[in-house]
Image 1 (cartoon, rainbow, N blue to C red):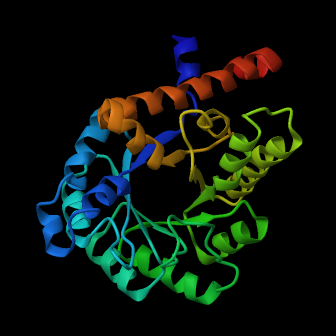
Image 2 (cartoon, rainbow, N blue to C red):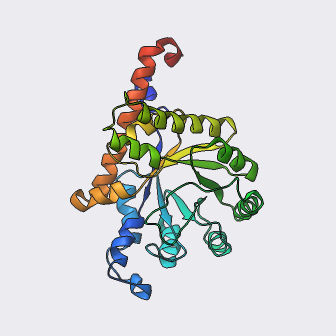
Image 3 (spheres, one colour):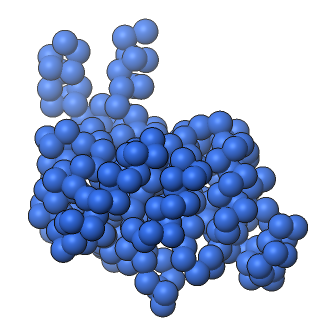
Length: 280
């Protein structure tokens, strides 16, 4: 029983981003047609939850390029795990969050020409504006999260703004992993892993929750799952892509297994290197 408890210790939760279910729908349907277009992102959440998802994430973009308002309203009513709404720090989106009241509202930067989010939110560059948005989200009963690059200046600014959670942008790590074949002996990849881990340590030392996400997949997730104290991993595109072949429920189960395998590797390393400390 003691070994089983250790294996379950500090396993990150998985929040599945289902935006790209809606991307496929919007490739054919637009506007009010989204009410009956296929595949329906609202139906998708249930398969993800049955596959072991601990939360559901969607990004309501200002241009409504995939997720639309109808999806957000229905998902908030139906999701039985944690509902995380990604959003820009605009008055329109804050108003929607205040009405819908997601469990977590995560502020992200947003550009009309980007395919996906390309970097972390610049909290340090607009402290008064972001602090006001965070206060409004808190007044609506939402946990406030910031999507940040692994940058001490941004982490410190997030703490000053009142955020509860920081999600570290793992895109640069994922790019380095792909470029170097996951070989940690390559200094460039080892440095990216260290950047994420160090940022997570700073986030936690300032009393905020440490999450991570962006471009994580079945091959590269283990090194992030092993980061000390990481609470949640937010993963979407890789799971939806895998779901084309095996279904969303199975694809989610496979990602849960990959995350758990990563944390088991961390525990095994701890037991080997610090056997007494690990068992105290």
